[in-house]
Length: 325
Image (cartoon, rainbow, N blue to C red; front, side, top):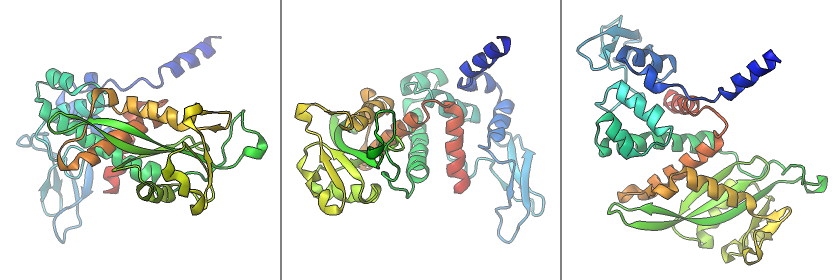
């Protein structure tokens, strides 16, 4: 009984996030923590031309981070932030670590973060956007990649053996964002849900025309897959493209049994909530569409890691992107 309780307690606390605020009370502890997490390298190949020596950390109190890379062959120096998530900011590593791995990962509002760290909201918003861009890139390149949806059969207790074939659900939904002038506007988003894997993908689109939606579906859904949609006219071409198209008339509800679009409807609910939909997605200036897509991909990622440690998951994302670069 004692061992069973011990194991249960350990399981209960397994997903507790790392206490970033406690660890980052000193600059020295912060530097070594983020290095231990792989967010900073302790050695790298020399950046000087025609030199292939190894650069390692040396103490340098003239540098804001207290360390610099120095090559043992040619004595060249380089910032320990170069080619990392922390590059390009004048903030201390303590401030940036707290913003990324405490305030952002816990979805604490920009206003609160700026107040606690005595920073401007503009500064915090810029860093929130930066880490959200990294997550969005991870979702696009690692989670989605080149593998189409609809390759694995649907499964579950309510799925008879004769219905164990690949099925995806496709739908569109309106998302609200705030423009540069603070005006609330709506954009269309196309969503695709794979019953076989439980994964979903969402794409900001300019309209719901067939010419807009069909290429995205063809690029992201395997051929000859069964596709459930509502009665929107743009989907009538799916059968001509080689898909098995089944329609759920939403005027009569969202279907019953396996003839339903409840999967994608559930994804809409989750992603809108997780992507800060109700706080107002920020889409400003000429890059508004990309910013909205970043918010949506952030929501997809949060849905994906719902049962995982969020700090460790974010560390994996950052290391995946920056090691590859």
